[in-house]
Picture 1 (tube, rainbow, N blue to C red):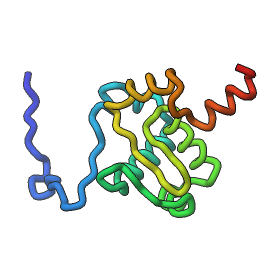
Picture 2 (tube, one colour):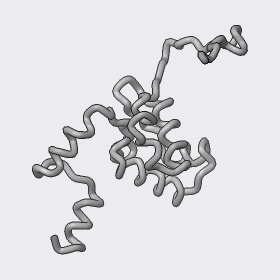
Picture 3 (cartoon, rainbow, N blue to C red):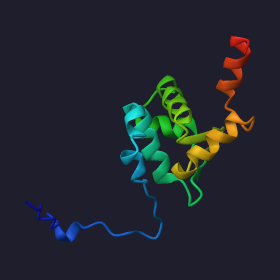
Length: 129
């Protein structure tokens, strides 16, 4: 049985505005969303919404905390979660929402001695690896 996909409110059908952002369907389809908590998902949605065409945003912690009703601890944890999942990169004050299609390539670069996160470097130092 096919579902009738007619708008419930035709006068409120979304239109693509001049300043447009998007959320890649692969976030759900490839289960990236399953690996983050609700605070990280809220931060990701905010960053996707406010970032430019290159995925860049300069929103500061104070503004993000206010908009998302998060304290510094929750924001830091949400940001770290997104960084670990390679959904965003961050170098204060700049966020970059990362392209999902480049994840496999970036992982290969990291394995072969390319860029690594500060957390990976610290874990290597502490672990003596």
